[in-house]
Image (cartoon, rainbow, N blue to C red; front, side, top):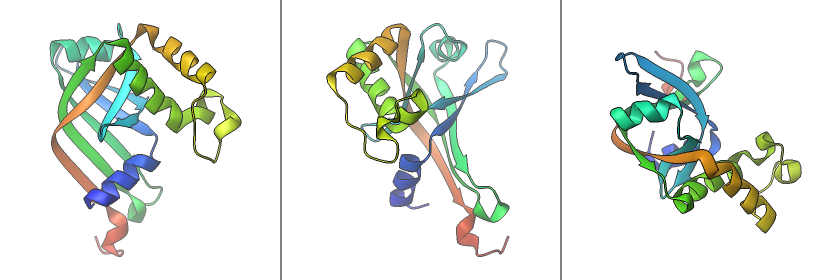
Length: 156
């Protein structure tokens, strides 16, 4: 994918598969909602979660965003990198807002389904309150792989 295609794809997709390294060396895989903050994938999660404990011990992670129902439609982005863990409430809140604004209907906020999201004071305060026990994770890429089978024209 081109840089523009990557940006568009990440802007449309919702689910981020996150792999960290567990205490026994085995992969620990979860699916998260994510946002884009300063051009990088970011998500928030509870500070005492297994993935955070894994990243505190070893910041390496791999994330994957993929879609497609038929083989000829498969496309995705895999990023290997390091997690930057943010604890500052303003940083965590900014990530929470990025995640919430992409997923407002999934949080039950149907006011913005199918149209651009804008925070009002009450919604911003609610999102910030959700972040009280969370940390922010920014994916700092080391290696990026992309694919788009739609470009193969049926030839594999």
